[in-house]
Image (cartoon, rainbow, N blue to C red; front, top):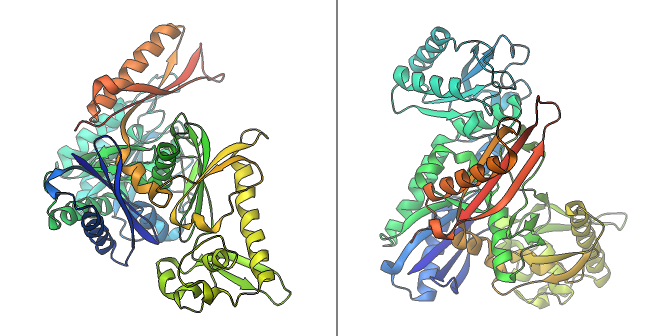
Length: 518
């Protein structure tokens, strides 16, 4: 039995085949084209040709893609939606999408705030205004809207009104309407949670397109016996059905795949990962083998959200970053890049654009293309450019630390050839075998997870009893998502006291993960 892992980046589409013992059989890089499915099909063909593996023996296929992130950032292919907030009169002061840029606000065909919602302690503010909600859903149906975002004040404490509104929405608009519920997506904080829900609702067409496209790409190559999964941004997998329901969870899955792959290849459970691509470098942290989650609101395409996201710093440095020597003698590197055109435009490949890869070749750090074509770069210029690249990475490395102690560092990604293997702030710098396809490997070896999050008053339910129940619920969620029960383990426990809540209230968050059923 084999697993096929694919990760679509801006420059390259990486593919890897691993066996049932998680040994890498073959790994390749294939240029990402304007049509990403050409890149996926090309990568699949290439890895199958190299490995010689029987297509019928591939039982699992995993895809990591930037499609949702790109759709938000580029404002492309987002579906028209309706927004229902439950929380009048308490939340009338701030309208939905109040701080969004005008070019993305256009996705909202209509929005309204109706009566209902809860207090911080779960007490009902007001009954759900069924009449007003029904009128809104009828209006959206008339305007042929196919996706609705529903949020409610303090729905992370009680989501009764959200569930009631979702049921009402399907009764009025039909069972085929896409309904996104904020309590299933975001965390505490109404506006940021609502924002994440709105984005999720707008991404349903994008999700449908890339899930169907991936399945079609596999079928075209004769891979018909494989269960198909999508990478999500906590370093674990989800089913195609789950991805269509929660496409927002695929945002930033590329860096998390690289972090998981780096951990697997290096055998390190705690380290800082530097993933260098063709256009950008992503830095993330491995904690107990999984990506460290961001503890602050994360902005995606100018929209503040608070759903789970990896703690990642991205800088405009990659193998294709353009190097320029300015009139005053200073040298700049990036943030613009030749991207997937590097094999045509970089000097070592016969082009006329000086890139970070050309600098690495000139300094003898890498052996790609024709080194003679980089020899014309003045040594002083090359050394200045390397100092700029080193400074960019070392500054970001310091930003990822939580203490002043040096950290173990793992270099991965095809572009990591441009970085030196001695960096200030690093205790050790490791570049493992198969480093170039760590993201695809991370996708292929990923586990399935379940996360339980709730506010619990320990005066009502004793702490030990509450935590045991929360762990059992997290394990149950992981099994429901497709994990083998015997392999599920608790990988993260958060128990945070909330001083501004009554009684002895804590925010309890438990995450469990296990191996995927074969």
